[in-house]
Length: 219
Image (cartoon, rainbow, N blue to C red; front, side):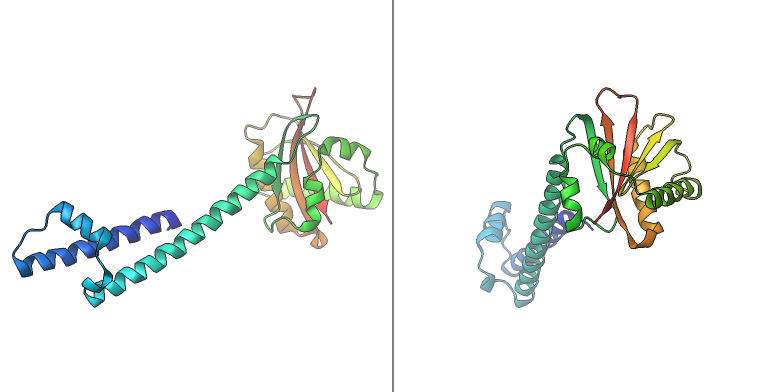
């Protein structure tokens, strides 16, 4: 159950508990309890006037509601931080850019790269490690063939250098973010020599028909 739904659920239970107590009090005094009177009592009645069982139950509900509220606030803050980090990734000369991390999360060593302005330009200037590039080009090709989540995508070219690989597509992808997630998952599960990677999607200005996916090794 989501925290917000849980809070609403507990508040409803607390209201029902107080209502049941007032119903019991009404039977003892043979006097009807009006809705206004009950609302005033629920908002302002001291806990001492309630039965010990009801008072203890309400205190427990308040404790749980406060705990869930704090958890919800933390969750909202974490989500806002992630969204802010994505907004700070300026694509530079590109028209769009999307960053997705491996399922294990983003390490401190990855942050300098995530703050980069243009992945496309960085890749053009990156030197080539002949061993690493050949090895990881083959690994990516094999992954595109063997992984069930990646088979349906048609990759036209795979090029790796020293820390970065670039994948280009033969056909347009209806939702590139789906491929980005699948690639991030598949590479994480493959666990190539305990290396960590971050996946970046970027469309270069002037090349709107070409969508590039970059796989960057994190330090």
